[in-house]
Length: 122
Image 1 (spheres, rainbow, N blue to C red):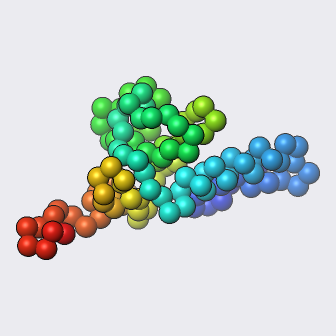
Image 2: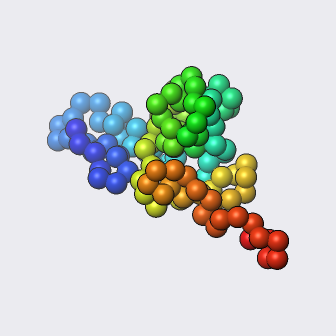
């Protein structure tokens, strides 16, 4: 079974048994990534509300529990488990808790619009 080049969505094989499992996994991943809006940046999976469909950015420091080794990944919760997507350079997400866009530089997540200035509020 192969995957797509950019998002790692699973591809169906000819005459594949259990094709619905492969298809559903890809749909969950696409659901988490399309128009990506994360709840918050989390360093500890226990502090993230583990609710079906919730999406988070994994912090690049102080990572613990299920998030160990998943620094900077996009984490989404589906069917009682965390799934992770490695970011690609240029990916952009909306962080709901902070009301801001962040983008992936290739090594870290950064505020898309930089610091707020005192004149324009941007």
